[in-house]
Image 1: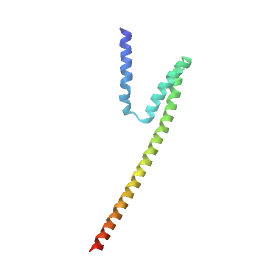
Image 2: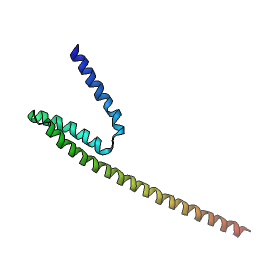
Image 3: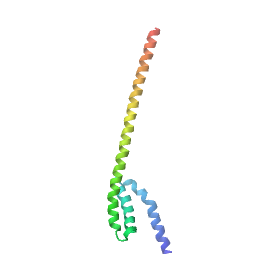
Image 4: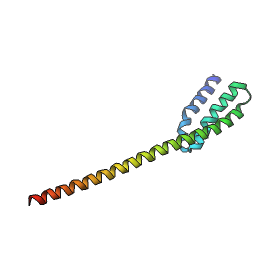
Length: 109
């Protein structure tokens, strides 16, 4: 019964961990994910290098997460620039249509 309670508590903690991750910054998330993976690998490979694996994983997670965030920011900037260009084209087209309509109305008078 005690083992089931511990298993349930660990499962509940793992299930609710992502909810608290929204409050963390991108570097912290990368460190947590990389550190967890590195700790597991360090423990599985040699058994007593869990902390060393977690430290290395934390550093790697931060670097990888920075690259991901930089890539997403660049995509967002490109998308925003394209939206601005399209809005400029739409305004110019509307201006030309209005001028054409004024010229057409002026010709009919």
